[in-house]
Length: 513
Ligand SMILES: C[S@@+](CC[C@H](N)C(=O)[O-])C[C@H]1O[C@@H](n2cnc3c(N)ncnc32)[C@H](O)[C@@H]1O
Image 1: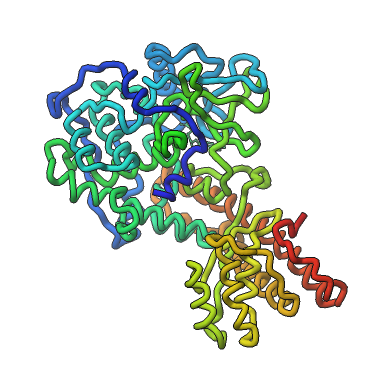
Image 2: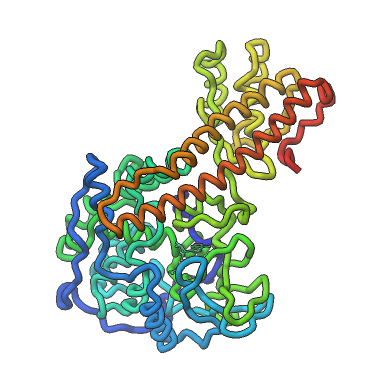
């Protein structure tokens, strides 16, 4: 699950998950159906109509809370303290950035260690189930961590108060902010200009619509249903384990799961720590501290009482943050922001076949996306542009260009062909401008966009989604405008002959510096 692995919080902690298991508090387990389970909503799978999809959006699971509910978070805080969380220098509060977050109660120094969530309060693949038979069955089928945890969360949620995690689950958002909750129609309408739309559709596809089943076989609901749930309906009743409840649990995992790279990539939910919001201005992340035996992080700036404390979810673009976590940082605040620029070979190219063959040899295709940043772009992008514009007389260099265009090869990327440099830069500029025109069209239309709503609640949601889309488009188009400016200037210089022959553009990584 490379994609899922890429979007989880950037952190390394907990030396052994088996040690977590050992220290788990003993709980009185309930037998399936001795306790009444809370059914999740009934739903059917439909891909046929956008109207149906839009109607389904209001359906939510019957557990969790409103995304900004502080009452449930306070109950969580109390339960955590009673369950072994040591006194904290922070408290959960409503915040301006991120709905709820952790606020400093006292002065916090730079370099101070905070949190100390003990292993017994961490949820991972070894956590004990309120319905142990269900856990056993998933283990028998060797279900990987992501779908296992998704199923675990639903199972525990359905046991309501009899689950030891009921206070935690009650404080989780009923509808996490995630593109998973955007319908196909909403993605089409709001993210028309951004490449992130395709990524979002892929992700939704991964989780619900089975198109990438070969790649993510064990990670999707249908696979679990067909292979496991249908064979054990008494343990996994469909009124609890259905599309809607999986959408919720995957939404929770995408936005709150913490990676444990030092544990061979194992993953965990860390109550309390997962109340920390992301800031692009901090570098600190969650970790396991062997001496204090808890999940901690070390501040990289001081905080005064009342200030919100942040961690980093990793160096991600605004699009990636929207995709996984459902928010877009303020424009210009994210140094890791990037936009994907799509480049394609021209079908009319006399050497189309040869170029495509060379690309395929290096794992590339006729269309490739490369990330543009406000500070520059990868050398691979320039190599692809050289290949795309090179004439038949350069066919012997196709191989070298294709190799340099691939980030899978270690060959020299720093190639330069002064004779075709102008065409290559013009080729990139054309792609940039075609992308810019899509953004401009969207941003112009967004002012008068028909939100197509039938209720005030739906209006709020659509306004919120539209604002996210506008923020993303503004930040992505800002990068494209910067690239356009630099490319035009460079072309003007080349054309006016000032730079011709000087070959000073061999290193493009710091192109904008
Ligand atoms: C790990 S949770 C953090 C706690 C969360 N704010 C809550 O109330 O449960 C991640 C979620 O917090 C929100 N979030 C985190 N950082 C944010 C930020 N910088 N701006 C806006 N929302 C943010 C997003 O909704 C994200 O999906």
